[in-house]
Length: 118
Ligand code: 5GP
Image (cartoon, rainbow, N blue to C red; front, top):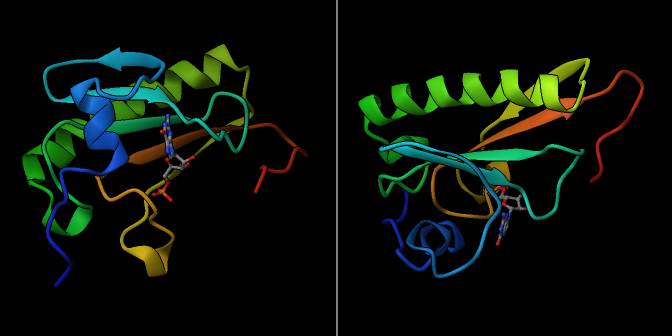
């Protein structure tokens, strides 16, 4: 089993408004804001407001709500950044590349022949 949710993670602080973010979407259950170190222009994070560390402890209803917002954001960034494609990613635990321990989805516009920044 994974460690417990820690309220001091950076996205919890962003959700509380303790740390600024560039919010592009918000509803009752979910926010989306721009990634501070974008892997491509338009790299956006979709973050459910409910406190879960990652997919393992997420409420299924919150996940469903979040993926619907992921779709909205994918359509929006595809248009806004004139992307050829959109890459969606979500990491669980450090071994899988998770660095911020509040559930989130990456929505990353891709251009044909243009590599992601590391
Ligand atoms: P992951 O945990 O899925 O590997 O990625 C966490 C993501 O959060 C990274 O892409 C990183 O650039 C982003 N990030 C980390 N700290 C901040 C922050 O303070 N503000 C914003 N907007 N993004 C952040």
